[in-house]
Amino acid sequence: MLGSAGVGLSPDPFGAGNNATVLSHENTMLRMSLPSEGVEPLPAKMWPNDTFTSRFRSMYVNDEAVQVIRQTGAHTDGDVMVLFRRADVVVAGDVLDLRQFPVIDPAKGGSIQGSLEALNRLVTEFVVPAMPLVLKPGRTLVVPGHGYVSDFAEVVEYRDMVTVIRDTIQSLIEKGMTLEQVKAANPTKGYRARYGQDSGPWTTDKFVEAVYNGLKGGKP
Image (cartoon, rainbow, N blue to C red):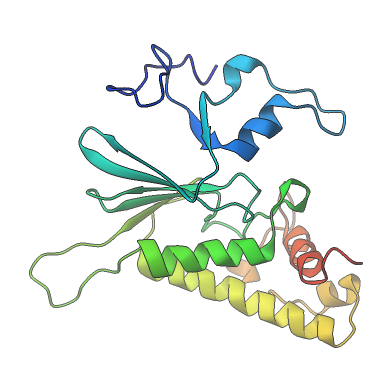
């Protein structure tokens, strides 16, 4: 379905022919094509038609230098980001979602450590802030997998929020608190009103649990 929903790049570096070029990390391909825990693989027409495992996959598209960046272990073990150099745009995918706390799926290789690594990498390597007092305006735009387009300041604010919550939960763990005690201590206080949700697929409790278990090394 994905591969047939368009045409490939021209010139096509992937040999996708008349199908749309769908590039992913190899882990994404494996999860889509192999059965796991009773879940049947997706139809072959939905699979990516090219994969990579290196730190970067670089190419030119319409004379634009594009880098697909491996950032596995944040949301899942298949995370990638895409940097459009001339346009000064970074597509962050599920690494960033300013509507809510980071969605972490430990069952698919996600972790709080990986989420913070990805956010720190966005801030330090790929996102350039707007320059004050300069005649030529400009800034890197960050496109998330969900939510609204953001910039350096918003990514820094989000990264700092996640860091504060991680450190708070780590401190509570070092005091010997259980998961339920940590939840009761409300480690997301100050951020819950903006990013938290009490219902739906990704609640504040699920986020706290993912962080707690990640810091504990999966131990209860």
